[in-house]
Amino acid sequence: MKKISLLGATGSVGTQTLQVVREHPDQFAVSALSFGENVERALPLIHEFKPELVSVKDKSVAERIRKDVPGHVKIVYGLEGMIEAAAYPKSEMLVNSVLGSIGLEPTLAAIEAGKTIGLANKETLVTAGHLVMERAKKSGVAILPIDSEHSAIFQSLQGQDRKAVSRLILTASGGSFRDRTREELRNVTVEDALKHPNWSMGAKITIDSATLMNKGLEVIEAHWLFHMPYDRIDAVIHKESIVHSLVEYADHSLIAQLGLPSMLVPIQYALTYPKRLELKQTKRLNLWETGSLHFQKVDRQRFPCLSLAYEAGKAGGSMPAALNAANEEAVQGFLSGRISFLDIETLVESALENHQIIKDPNLKAIEETDRRTRAFVRSQIEKKS
Ligand code: MG
Image (tube, rainbow, N blue to C red; front, side, top):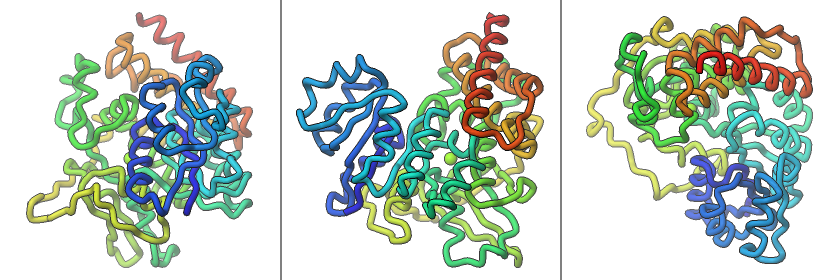
């Protein structure tokens, strides 16, 4: 029985992680979980999965759920609570599916405590990949990707000669605005942007898919996870989201992982790795039903956020942390109707220009970068609205 700490239990990946646990009650158990403030969604999950420790957003949420949760369940809150849940002694593995840079410290705490990490929190690697990978190596801890693209690459690397890898190729659906011109992007609404053709995901990541910033963040993630220089990581538009990513080897063989779009597969693979289990909740891919698969070169002019991410990644140091913070604030600004869709890229670009890079930043420098960049972008949004 593998015991899991799950952070972000009521989110999209969190809920699907619990779906995997639900299908294999003899294999997995949840010993600690965290959620923010979605009490209605969380309470039934707490009763069903019976964690011993529950971490919530703040003290008021903790007080609100006390009477509805069995007495022996320990309730904690805030970042400290999340760290306690991540490093919970009885858990063997952390599944980190919280959104945003708040996921970093709990990941580091779990690494320190020797847990295997299932990582769905992109920001952890984007903002502090150098720290995370270095500490994971030191603690002998595996970082298993829970992102469909990285899981596909990870799966395509199994049993292969790692030294013979020549290129990683991430596929991108192109998001909700794939076929629109820049002119047509000028007046798109939040509602338009949230209609993703293939994946049902949270609002932030759906916007990131439409700007291709999501792919940019994934390029940085791949750089750290697979120790690959940026000029050997590519992205290709693939509208069907059937080929989840590919690895190119020295002999120009491409090895890919395919399947119908479902996050359950990468989640379960991280949980069962290196084994595989049946997964009844997913459907078989019949290629004759799909018929044809399409691939298209990414137009960097059309999707400048991808270029910004490459630039930030190559610059290194604190630049990716600035990129991530600027993007989070800008997307928030768009979602709340204060700025237009195309303002997202402009704001991120000016935040990067404004940022004084810190080489080899420690945790404090990363937090400082995050705080300052957010303040900068907020002040820019303020000026616009
Ligand atoms: Mg992805």
